[in-house]
Image (cartoon, rainbow, N blue to C red):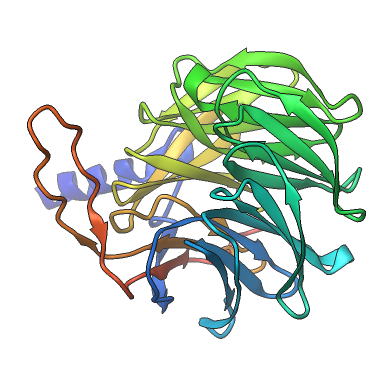
Length: 344
């Protein structure tokens, strides 16, 4: 029986030709944030060693080396995301409750100005080749394009539905359209949509990640799938199962891992074995609510915000279930990293 058990365990670690001596990621520590209110995206400036976590009406700044909060950016009502642009020494936040983007001095963390956007600006990305910021207005069904240096709007692009996260590759920006279960492709020279790609069998996409070297795009979908698409054809070439309540995806070139963080307390780690094959190598146990995530390319660690929750009250007859309430002062960043150093 011991021989059979040993062989079974060994077989469980052999995934489509790739042998993993152990699960690739493990828990390291947590960073206490505290405060009240919800959160959304977390981003990183790896060179400056700063993490930026959106939190209710502010952006919390964390030093991932010291595992400590080192500052905050105030007056960002309903903030969803923050992007740092080091070459300009500026950062930009999407303030969903006031339909504006804050322009922030990274050295002082003070707001320089605010820029009007469409309704409920949510995700944002920086397109470095043209120095442009793409802000995705979730209920406004549009993308606001901002010249980052001039800090002014240069275009508003109508979209086919509710945009979620996005990624940039060469002369194109890809954006998940949640209510249409598709990806819209934007030509960055024309500032217009030039293609729409269905995600079937994926539905209701939120998180997105890009493998630019192999022309592959990953979309975390709410029907518990992560499709991998060919950005040259727009076709889905592979899918893997993920958890419930996904909200973020990241891809790491060094390991060829694609991550999908889910609110059910799991993060799926899949390996791009080839541009045609995607294989789950670990279902990492995290905590309930840990649905957004960022990866530090310097340490290969991932950071996931979450908090403690009070039980949701019973809904009134015929009403939708209520959301659980966040316990004040329990917001934290969970830190997970490789069990072994990634091999080049």
